[in-house]
Image 1 (cartoon, rainbow, N blue to C red):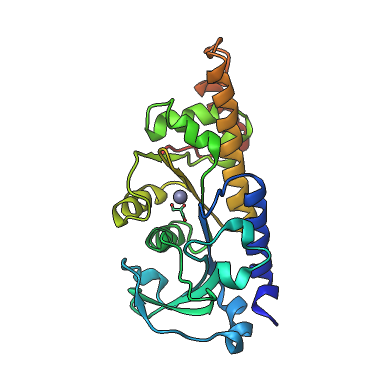
Image 2: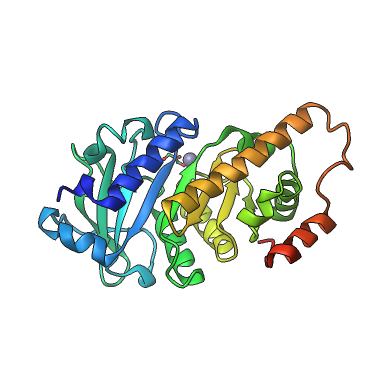
Length: 270
Ligand code: 2HA
Ligand code: ZN
């Protein structure tokens, strides 16, 4: 089987196409990674070409030996469906979780996204927090969640409560809330560490004036989470643009608690 025909690669490529269609990935904005199951990579072993070990810049011992599909540095989501071998690649971590090697893709001298430290640290955190269930990490630049970081105080409680209060679905889709971080240098280890700290308690972290990172068990989960957050953010942006004429006319904290009780949700704010 060709690597691009493997079911996980087809889902990876479809998610990239859908995210591009949403307008979340101008130019080379955003990145996507997937922690590959052993049963998924094993049939592809004869297609892998193992490169030299390079430092990860972070220490992720819980991910030792794991394989990841990940977008290439500088690649455009727009081009992933027609050129996956250049825009995406597969890497493997060494047995200490400090180095990686390229195994497939990254054609024409490419390498993994500049956000590799963020992806690895947050995969480690989500793998531990979810008992191994979470496998997808997606970073994108949706317009309205970014716009809200100019309008609301930059704290997780304000964002979480405001989004839960916007659309009934929100508390069901992200009962563990949304983390929020002030602006920091994209791709820096500092931003990766601060994000990982929040990701222990949530599946979504907003980076002010930049974008959002979402985690999920499946491509559908990660895509659906970002889609839901961005839709609620878009509603809020319109409400604020109308001057928020009826600030008391919304889903209240009490309503959200009733919803949680009805559906047996455990709500938390990261
Ligand atoms: O990959 O979005 O945050 C480009 C970025 C960096
Ligand atoms: Zn970004």
